[in-house]
Image (cartoon, rainbow over all chains, first blue to last red; front, side, top):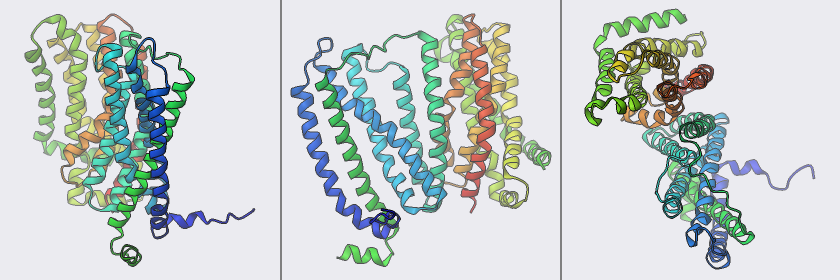
Amino acid sequence: MSKSKIHWYKYAAPVNFYPLAGKIIPFFTGLTIILFAIGLYMSFFVAPVDFQQGHSYRIIFIHVPAAWMGMFLYVLLAIYAGIGWAFNARLASMMAKAIAPTGAIFTFISLVTGSLWGKPAWGVYWVWDARMTSTLILMFLYIGFISLQSSIDDTRRADRAGAVLALVGVINVPIIYFSVQWWNTLHQGATLTARSFKMAPSMLSAMFVLMGACWMYAIAIVLARVRLIIKERERDAPWLVEEVAA
Amino acid sequence: MFAWVVWRDLILAWRRRTDVLATFFFFIIVVSLFPLGVGPEPQLLRTIAPGVVWVAALLASMLALGRTFGNDYQDGTLEQLLLTPQPLFLIVLAKVLAQWIVSELPLVLVAPVLGMQFGLSQNTLWIMTLSLLLGTPVLSLIGSIGAALTLGLRAANVLVALLVLPLYIPVLIFGAGAIESTVNGLEPQAYLLLLGATLVLALAFAPWATSAALRISVE
């Protein structure tokens, strides 16, 4: 097997990727629905009640996957943007652009659910905990990326400027994270970081199923958005006219 | 070449003194507004002073960012600079240095006076000046990336704030932390070392990113 049967680079061209994405979106959408159904069922009916926090702990089933996705998608965005910039690959830049809103939404969800969980657990909606603060800053980075891209009319420049910003942001993420952590610990010591409760296996598996669901959702929605971006940018290409007409 | 760019930018800035003075007075006014807002209680003022001085410095330096490349972009000088055989890294570094001398150095120098208004001790004033001296170049360096990315865009000023302020956060934390630890009678050394480290990192990477951004913006 020296040669793979599928020629992967072929799908780096929008003309080949557009129909492929159209074909696989329903598959991922289906997986999203199934996994969400299983995960939500497990998290509401199978996972036991936490003896300390009661039912309110169930927020973490959506909170933790959302927070993971928020962070991970930013890295993914930077990788795509970097590839798009370095190799002049249009599709990679489009992917970066398509990922940004989804990442921002996940980050937002993790902030909102986190503060909703904080109220019963800590008694306040918001504390300047290192993790919360750095998630908030991550949200700002997403907003910066989106607004920079949308305020540049020339798509080529928008993609590249976005790539520079995303890469600078990625270098900064660890610095910001540690600075916030030191800031927090040096200031007031550990106050409310008691998140180390042991998890029952059923809780853990529910969380992982929902994690998968979030992944599938992200893939499906990003592909759908990429298709729209392709449509918008290549609207004059003959193949697209044919494709849409067909 | 390096010295020439610095010298040229300094002369240009001197001919537009009002722009520079505006940033300077903006800093002074913002810092002076806080006691009016929160009340003249000395203990409280001493507590908030580090944060106030640093946040004001952040905002003031952000105001000045547009000038780093803006005028040169408009009259075409920037394009000529991009075409020169000299490494763009050096030219960017020179422009950032000039920008720092023009709009940040005055802030550093006036900060101790403002610190006195907040009732800081002499030792704290020294540390404050030192932290600003180490931290403000980082602001100029990081800011130059944002300024280069938003060259010639609609609403560039607001956009720059959105892009650059989150990246300023480590500097704010370390800088304000250094002052605050001396206010509380602790050693500021750790914070100052961290500030120095960010400065070194920014010196190495920021001009490079700015050059890339300039080439993208001026195509």
